[in-house]
Length: 169
Image (cartoon, rainbow, N blue to C red):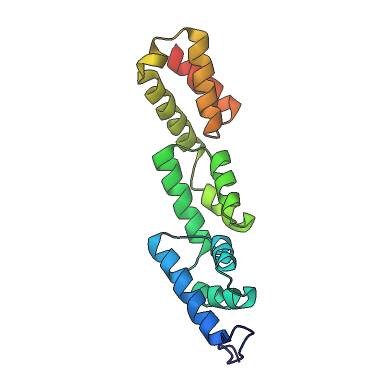
């Protein structure tokens, strides 16, 4: 039997009530923005939903396609790379923080090529160099600011060195 059981808990709540509450909480969260399964498990725990009920609801939501960590990871990589110019390393960290499994992280990151990363790094540096505070600064200040910025966005030192040298020549 895989439906809710009519067992009454200590607080008078039945499993069916808990399951309805879990569905409602999770659907409200998904209505605002996509989320990983791990994020939804954490939400259910904060709302005092029993773990086995949350797992059952999330299993069903995965079956019908409402929760899909691989699609969520792919969407997150596309948007974060395009909008924030984040490199693969920073994207990996963000996906891990959101509870995405390594099996879903690899294919999502495969969408970003080395050429995409170089283009993003160049765009970041060009934007920073358009700011008067950086454009008019001494060369060593420019280097420090640009390398720091690229490092915070997750770019490797090789890419940072290449792009910064191209931009300052």
